[in-house]
Amino acid sequence: MRRLFLLVSLIAGSLGIQSIQNVIASSNQPATEVARVISVVNGDTLDVQYEKSSSKLPTRIRAYLIDAPDSSDSLNCFGPESKRFTEDLLLNRTIWISHFNHQGPNDHLLAFIFLDSNLSTLVQAIIVSQGWARVDVRYAEELPYRDALEKLQIDAQNGRRGIWGKCPSTAVPASETTRVSINELEQNPAGQDTDKEWIELFNFEDSELDLGSWSLIAKEGSYRTYNFPTSTKISAHGFLLIHLPGIFLQNQDEVVELRNSSGVVLDQTPSAGLDDRYDDNRCWARVPNGSSQWKFRVCTPGGGNGG
Image (cartoon, rainbow, N blue to C red; front, side):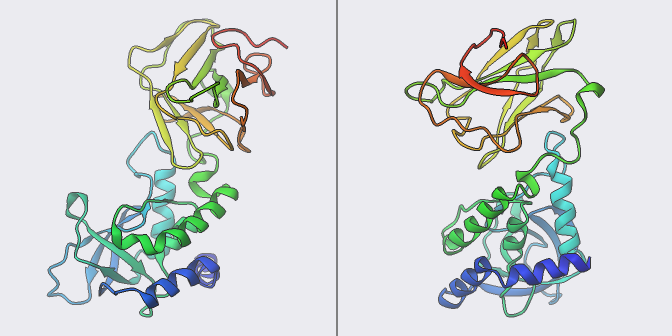
């Protein structure tokens, strides 16, 4: 806990927070309420008890500016971690809530959340800086804060902190589970990328496997999820080519996870990220099939990757 409060102090003095303070000083201020956090639902959602017992405001608060993983989503291993960070930071603490009396989905009160009466330490900035939520700006009143938070997010991404790092809670060694690997991927097809990107899987097993309700997660920037149809199968020692919708893969620093129907991470591309800046028919591939060595070479979709 001491480390967390030291972290708050360091972040409060950072360039990102100072930029937000300057915005506050020059902006039309919303109403402010004082409350105590009595429970944490997700990394971005709180239940509070207002200091003024006569307050008619909703007691469930949804933080402006950020989107944290859902702690109840079995396919997202970061949900419980994000919730735990916010609990350590806020549970049973007094906070200052600035709001415009706007309500979001499920009638939650949308609010800027601060740790001090001077409104100088923005909770959302702390959460973003440590990588436990992504910046999500949807309303006009959030716009003045966007640039400062995006700088903090870039720093968290570069540091692979929180949701930008490797899944900590569900990844298991390949020897302990079904062996299917991400074998090859086309991030940057020749010409327009839309609806032309793909990922190839390889099955090490001696039998056909049912991949229904499995998923691929592209992690660079905003997370993108491809959910396998329930009828998806891969043959023994065979390949499965997944044609991805729209623009799914980023051309730089992309990391992709393969998860089974329980959310267990079975495989992941290199955590340093894969870059494909060449608009041609070359891809990143495991050579040979399923190995730990990745090479950038001519694509072989649906076929083997020889040595």
